[in-house]
Amino acid sequence: MSKIRVLVTDDSAFMRKVITDILSSDPEIEVIDRARNGLECIEKCKQLNPDVLTLDIEMPVMNGLDALKSLMSEHPLPIVMLSSLTREGAEATIEALELGAFDFVTKPSGPISLDIHKVGDRLIERVKAASMAKGRWKRAVPRPSIFKKLETKPVSVQTPPPQSTATVPTVTPSTPNEIKPPIRKSLGTRPRLVALGTSTGGPKALQVVLTAIPADFPAPIAIVQHMPAGFTKSLAQRLNTLSQIRVTEVVDGEILEPGTAYIAPGGYHFEVRHVNGRLQAHLHQEEPRGGHRPSVDTLFESVSRLTNVDKWAIIMTGMGNDGTKGLKMMKELDSVTSIVEDESTCVVYGMPRSAALAGLADHVAPVDKIPELLCKLVH
Image (cartoon, rainbow, N blue to C red; front, top):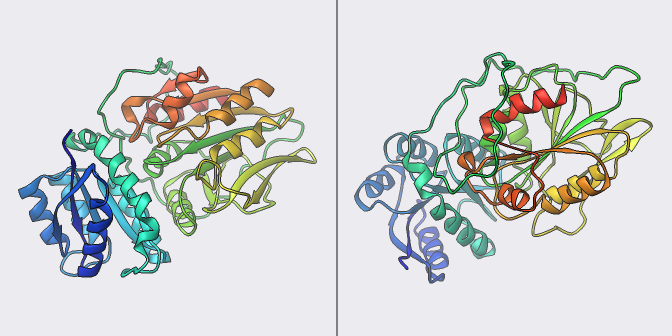
């Protein structure tokens, strides 16, 4: 079996060596070369055609974002970004994911992290996952218009398809709408709730889904996106500027209102409770589940315990099986309609595959069809 060929890019000679040592410690990975900046990285990608690229964001001559833009248009391949834990680093990382980066790993203590070994296992895991998705980056990225008015024709829903190498569609940003008051539900109606879980590839998938949902959507959307602390706020702010609905990082004790999407903050589990006839967010820092905090299972299980609430659950692209146990509990304890992302648009067909194989998918749809399908079901 051939090894995964990786090109490491970082302006620090120390970081290049340490990252190389970490990746080379795995017998399935081979670091074929190293680059000092974005310009050198682009040239070496053209010459060496690596399977995966690790790319620092902050570099001289040409930074990681500019290199990423160039590579995605001229030489697309799966790229794992290395990001610092700063507000600027978080914003740049979210932009990188929008531009087509596969995933990211945070440097524990800044651009030159002497303790980079702390995230060594995660870096190896992400490089291996990226190599499995290499074929998806060799295709042109479709750019469907998702801002057209929702049509009334039936949405095509299908059973899980065979292995595919399609890529996730990107979206064209709508007019920014920074301040969007929540749409309050009418008195006397039964509360509605959409619970959504996603991981690797999720930021782009969330952009496709949330930007296509109309402002008068009659339910709150509770979201778990696997992402470390410090990054979910930037993600929510970015999605809010692109969406007709309000998108925010959820706050403990917050009442969940229709027309708003609430993203769990990194490092906190997100549960929903029924308090005095209204849906309320509860955040806590109990132990991670399956290595995740926030956990999709934790969110879904809390939703399963809600009574007299109309529920919909969505599982989109991501590694592993988070969400399957929670969705199973939702179906055992109450009525819920589930949507699972079709393999053809998943960056990583892990979480959706697990739910589909468990027989928990009521509907299977490509990511760009999920908003229309959801609106039909909720309305």
